[in-house]
Length: 111
Image 1 (spheres, rainbow, N blue to C red):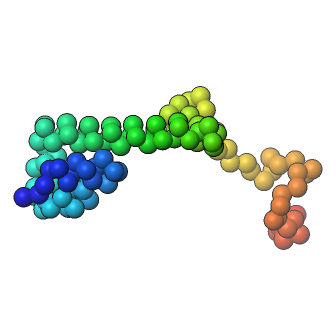
Image 2: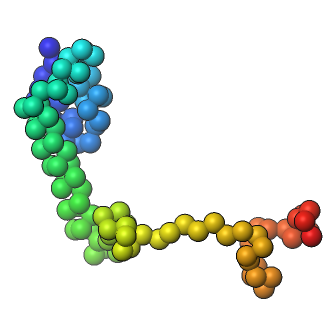
Image 3: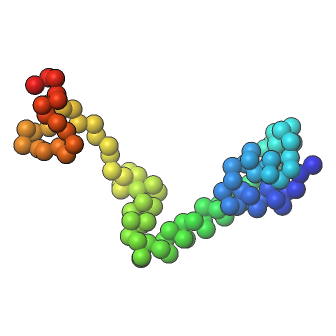
């Protein structure tokens, strides 16, 4: 039988549940049973929330020093408002006046 305290501590530092359970001394059958126990589910949810909260506070605290941290957080928390979309640009859509670094136009077999 594993140690529930070690399980919680491991989850609170970000270790995935399966790995945390192994580190806490649980075998595979015990891990399956743990994931179905309502008290353990609640403990895991609280541990995950503590992990998330600690790191969000850390990002917010350091965003004054590095504003990119705020940008990163906003992009992930509210992607519908702040995420940059990745658009695939076809070769024919690029104006001829655009210079692409590292591209050798003479090596292009279509020209």
